[in-house]
Image (tube, rainbow, N blue to C red; front, side, top):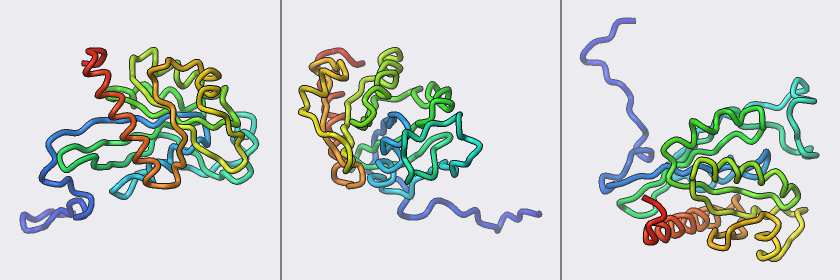
Length: 206
């Protein structure tokens, strides 16, 4: 196929272009076990059309992947989800959702590179899945906040009880959220940014 100088190459859609006022950006990762709502959060809060790498779950995954008893989830992220949101006219966040199935966790290391912070999504029906997730963030020194994603059939516990069960340091924010709602997902990201600001003020994050 010949290319002429007069040909035009399509650029990004108008709604996907960065505002001209943007002066800074940060990379944030959304992590958690399978089915906790990572793809949903990126999709609900992103101001651009999110990139997803979901593939249909098939019988070939039986015995390899764990659906944790879910009969409604038919797809799983195999690489990452990607979205973007403006926190202010000058500052944007690039969001990277990690795959939840353990066989894809080797991809996390690359996604963690350059991340300013992370959101750990937790399902109270499967608290144990969160331990290794948070351990990986701690090993890499990535600050994080915890979002308790509320599911209709999930048990509800007081925040102090959850903090104890997850063995969270008192300074790490932990909040209930519903990642299907854009406002709730955005509030969770604002909580993370406030936490990161506090670490900078204390000299714990440079």
